[in-house]
Length: 252
Ligand code: UDP
Image 1: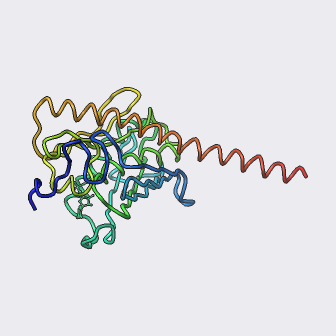
Image 2 (image 1 turned 90 degrees about the vertical axis):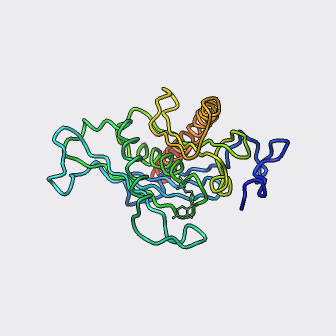
Image 3 (image 1 turned 180 degrees about the vertical axis):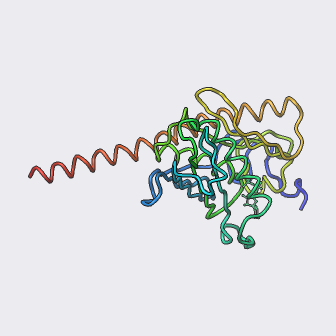
């Protein structure tokens, strides 16, 4: 189907799903959802649903893969077979290996890996429902799960994509926009410092369009960062109130 036939964006700049050019899909994050993980987060981003679980720091196996000077960060991104309308073949493929690698490299930038020689820090991300932008959702959820696990790190990474549809630069491409649009630029950054930890581009943009896309995505990352922090605040304020309730009961 040609992009023009689909009309991804109208004359007033309203997109197929009713969003403005600079509007994110709704994002919800809940931290600490898995009991057996050291840290976890469940994230809903539009129609994406993603679970992140962190284990470690723990002794790295196999031993020959240990690094005596630092921890090895191992992220594994997996898309469930039932996460997309056309069932995805289960197991790793080139795409999931690529996303796992770029997540590991991005997260290494924020974790104090030198504190944990010979250890591994394992991050598993399961995409339960996918509708474009899952690598950004995965990296955003993984950051919250790492913070929930209490892994020493400099800050969290927020991640978001911008791109181009119908000749216009827009934020956070949805499924149709990703499939039939002209460009998609997923990026991740540490919003407090502006450090870019992930940057990819699919399609073509002029230098001016690229700058616009980056500005949109960087502003959005600041918004996402607030949602990440709020999830952690909710998680730990709940624990405190539960703690207080338990104490009250014991005193009675
Ligand atoms: N997708 C799919 N089957 C696959 C891989 C991807 O249906 O095997 C869909 C899925 O909805 C995904 C979207 O295509 O979110 C875009 O995939 P892309 O590789 O651009 O990564 P993403 O945008 O999810 O980071």
